[in-house]
Length: 140
Image (cartoon, rainbow, N blue to C red):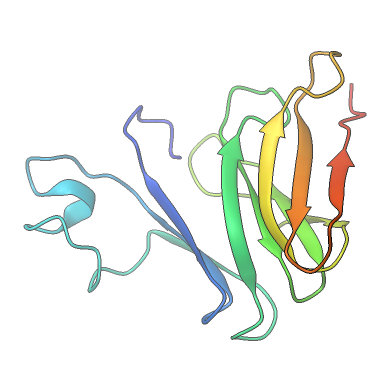
């Protein structure tokens, strides 16, 4: 997530209403920085807050949404209900979320080319209904 070609870890927490990113510092010092590989006591390298604690993000996925070669993340926020598209920055981190309205209780999101036009689209499933939201990418 910072462009160093190492797998990093991004987690969402409805409890703290946040997205946290832990950068992989390598196996020499322990994966993600701890001597045993634990991240429980390590502060996140990046943290983004959403709304009220206890009502925040419920799922996350990553991919290159805007095809600029930089990893982006998409976060489900069941409190609003929206999904937040957070475009990756070249030096690491993410822009504030671009919020897109969806049906209630978004519970999973997938980034994929759905309409055959070569752009990354979004599919969202909802725990609160039997709806599937399809968001087609209309950018150039």
